[in-house]
Amino acid sequence: MDKALLSRTAAGMVAKGRGLLAADESSGTCEKRFKSVGVECTEPNRRAYRGLLFGTPGMEQFVSGVILFEETIRQKSDDGVPFAEALARKGVIPGIKVDKGAKDLALCPGEKVTEGLDGLRERLAEYFKLGARFAKWRAVITIGQGIPTHTCLYANAHALARYAALCQEASIVPVVEPEVLLDGDHTIERCEEVTEATLRATYAALAAHNVSFEHTILKASMVVSGKDCARQAGVDEVAERTVRVLKRTVPAAQPGIVFLSGGQSDVDATAHLNAMAAMPGLPWPLTFSYSRALQNPALNAWRGQPGNVAAAQKAFHHRARMNGLACQGKWTAALEKQAA
Ligand code: 13P
Image (cartoon, rainbow, N blue to C red; front, side):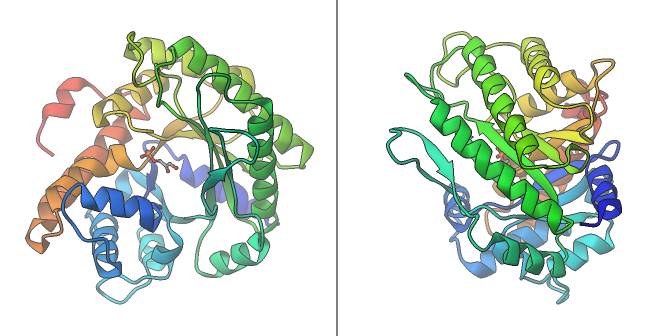
């Protein structure tokens, strides 16, 4: 465990004005995203698309690190340079998704537990050799009638803690992601309650497994109204509730917190982050680790056509720049309208 390296990596990930690009969609998720724009989900297409994003001129101003998928960390750019190396040359830290996905949790209808601990020590050693300096593991918490259960929260927290400990042992910074889904008609009050319980369970497990908070990054979901709830909370309410829960549960020793976008609109994800980052006296830097909210416009512009690469890169650059401003509380709706 190289603590100096872990500290450097974690500080770099949440450096001022920068955040993470989540490009670690599994081939199944990628298929869904590609299908929405009529692109066949083949290995060459996945490589072309990721190459487009990573090759966007100037993206490194706003993007501190990229979360790669297992397949992507083994792929190369058009110049024949492994993606991880090409990113590192630009000062962008390569990361890797290491979980094997959320599976049905036995005897807990409607709930999931994330798998992937078997053989993880060996896989982490290999990913380190391939250039990965941080990792991601996503747990999924669903809100519904009588759920989440205590069983689900603790099963997921336990897996996150074992994953995080293995990462630190391998000198890889763990991104700990317990995502509370926004699907459902629940209120924002209910989301706040569940998010607090989820984070309490997660931090209790991390402590029980000797995980060093100084070398851990939390990837949090924001406290928002359920997608189908009649009352949709505004930007300020989302920001206040999210920061309140984080302050109650996340140790100040942690180097930073990044957020997922979770199906929010691109601009909502930016506006929410901006409102939180603008709050005075926060104990940790807050930034983004978005997949959809960074990539949607680029994917729509690309549509699998080589002739659209420049337009897609421009769209991606714009979203990255907007979020780079938002994580400093410097974004405005007016800037949003300026051409990329
Ligand atoms: P979204 O920003 O699309 O929610 O994805 C982030 C992520 O990495 C989920 O694990």
